Image 1 (spheres, rainbow, N blue to C red):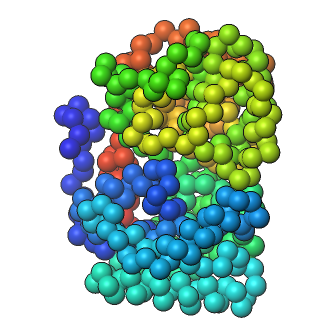
Image 2 (image 1 turned 180 degrees about the vertical axis):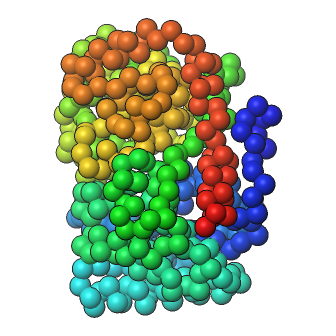
Length: 393
């Protein structure tokens, strides 16, 4: 339960004692907004988490090939309870939806897989919470008592978005009993499909990232002795990250360090090469979520360098709130969902990026004050907002 001075959990009866279907990313991936929301809901409900149904066509890269074989292997595994009241299904489908025959096959094949899992668990009249637009193929066909589309990205703007995905998602918007979006831009763009569309901004795992301020938390040895200042990033290194901007930062702060914590996505493997040969850029690779506060502890500034496009303008970067919870001033591309937050410096050009980092390094608020500014933006409070919406609808 939250501290007394945090926002209290509401008493709404909605989403309590339910069977909930959750179509999302792979459970073993980094914890995202969906993970946090379902962990809160699992205290009062049973969750059938359906691992990712592909939104994009795979490439011939070694990472995608490895992922395909992993999918095939996990498909043979039974539904497993990974945490109390959270059960994971590993579905299989063809990652394209443009041709009617393939779309029909995917629908039938996926319905059979999900229904079998529901029968095994004794799920009846579930609430279907869809975070993955490809799951629109199955929406309304699983005996749902309520269909909720929780849209947190402009999915069709991702590189390599699967053929036919736009049509599936637009139908999902229209067919849903309730649509929730995580950014103002998404609200503006998506309410045309469903008037019952509402904004719930992301929360943060405040207690977890606040541990960056604890004396007993130590900086990882791999970055403990790096020259200061340390300008840090954690998250997926994807093609929407401005690697040219990161290079500009590393060259300007040549006596300091740039630390990138996270795996490199297939679509960014070429772009990230622009950082090759820079001695003060440290790429750690993916690190466990449990360890991220210890990396943040070493950072002097949290960096969110996104390229500005349709995808990022509709984004609500979770890492920004995590940096703040860890007590870090943030420098970010000029995104609408970052502008509204305290202790954040936004920029529109690489020259301005450097100036904003200099300002952030001189930020007068203490780490405790920065962290406290995001204290009430818990995931529990966001689930409470969701429950209130459901009660009204």
